[in-house]
Image 1 (cartoon, rainbow, N blue to C red):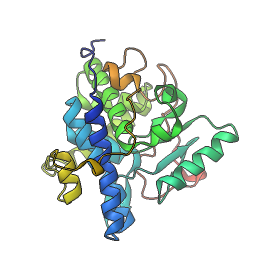
Image 2 (spheres, rainbow, N blue to C red):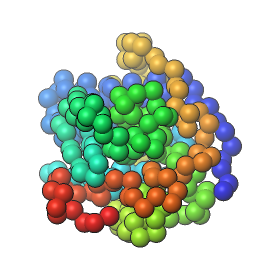
Image 3 (cartoon, helix red, strand yellow):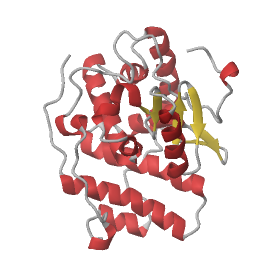
Length: 266
C-alpha cells in the first residue's frame, strides 16, 4: 500500500475551521433559520474545508456524507451532522446535545459499536484516535479524519469509487453495494459543487482571515488526532477492520430511521 507523505495540520488553521462551523450555527440561530438547513450546511462546510486541506475532491466527500447520513428534507437529500448509527440502527437528532446525550446513555449501558457525525466515524475501530466521544462529534475533526481515511484508500485502490466501497467495508458484497450507492450520488453532484465560501458574513470573515479575535473559539484546543497529524492511515483502512464481515454500520442515506425488521440485511 502506498501512502502520501506525513503532514502536520497547523493549530491556527484548525481553530479557524472550527470557528467557521461555530459561526454558521450562531448566525443561523440568531436569524432563526430552520434548524434542518443549518445542520445540513455544517456538513457541506466541513467537507469543503477538508477537501481544501487534504486534496480529496469535494464531490467525493459530499457524496460520502450523503451516503452515510443523507435524509430527505424539503424534497432534497441532505447530509446531517447529528446522525448516529447505534449497533446498526440509524437515528437523526435535531441537535448535537440530543445526539451526544443518546450516545452517552448507550455507552453507559455497554454499547461500543456506533458511528457518529457527518462521515459516520465508528467508535469501536477509531475511537482511540480522538480524545473523547464529544470530539468525534466535532464536525471538522470528523470530516478531516474521514478525508485522510479516503486518501489512504484511494492510494490503495486506485479510484474513488472503490475507495468509497472500502471506506464502508472490506467485504466485497457490502463494499460493492455501498460503492454503487456512492457513485449514483457522486454522479448527481456533478456540476453542482461550488468552492465559494457560503454567503454568510461571519463565515466569510473567518474564512478570509478578516474576523476579529472574538470570532475565534475562547479556548483553542491542540490537535491530538493521530490520523490528522500524520497523514493517511498506515494500518486500518476502512471503517471496519480488514476481513470483518460487517458493514461499518452506515445508514445508507435512508430518508428516515428504518425499523430493524425492515432494514436490508447487510
